[in-house]
Image (cartoon, rainbow, N blue to C red; front, side, top):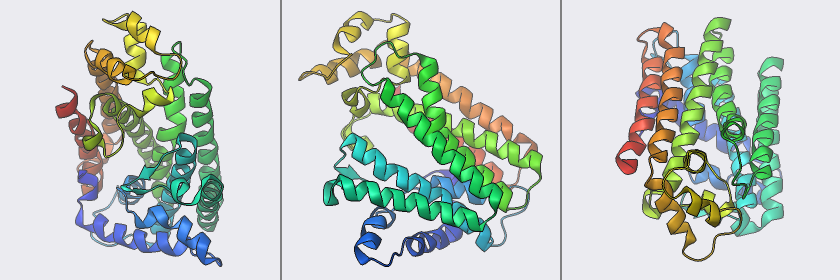
Amino acid sequence: MSPLLQLPVLQADLGRIEDELVASVQANDDFLTEVASHLIRAGGKRVRPALALASAGARQPLLASASSEVVLGAVSVELVHLGSLYHDDVMDDAEMRRTVESVNARWGNLKAILAGDYLLAKASEIAASLGTEVAGLLASTIARLCEGQVLELQHTFDAGRTEQSYLTSITGKTASLLGTSCRVGGIVGGLARDDIDRLTAFGINYGMAFQIVDDVLDVVATDEQLGKPAGHDLVEGVYTLPVLRTLVDDAAGADKLRRILGGPLAEGELDVARDIVRSNGSVDAALATAETYARTAQESVAEFGDGEAVQAMTAATDHLLGSVAAIAR
């Protein structure tokens, strides 16, 4: 478990967030309530609300529970994340999410899309209650999530995808919400503007490292280690950083990989493609990039000193890198 989630005070507040998440999606229609709360009840790491809580407490000892406004800010960013998962699962035709049946597999794509929209709407409603700045920030973040996802879709099965396109995409679809989680916590927690900017920079850089690590794991880990089918990105034609490094650097097997990619994989080609990417140094190169983002994240909050919350955020970046090291190397 990430050090960020092990802080006793944060654990207590995360319990409050679970209750608020369930309460926030209670609709007049019982069926909508059931569908909208499906992934909430399935659990999750709650990284985004934990970052919001820690950011709010970045300048003070975590001796007391967070204010109700901070909790609501944390709930709003998690609802955005959940809404995006509903939509992602429709696009990916996913059957499982968090060890349970996905919403689209259980109730169909139309209901999953509408439930995802409902979660985003509830997030926006909560954000509006916290002031115009938080409301505007959340709205712009939802837009960036869509922009990042659309950019990724534009380059599916594109073996000529550039590294810059990849980085721009993950900035939008992943890093923007992690940055916003920290920023919302700082705003609602009443921190100074310079501190809010530092925390936002932490979240964005942490988010970049987070997504690169996730993409590396898709190449190097097993189904059991991931808890979902490995190699999913290659199957879907989403060519991530370790794949792109293999192609651009003309590493061993690059020509063979180019012949495989560019369309749906034939039987047995997934294993061949993963073997090529794992064997030529591109995984280590991608992890080095993730480490650069992680260290930049840590440097962003170094000025805060040794406060409990920020130390946990810094330790979380080390834990992120450590989680993949044993598998990848």
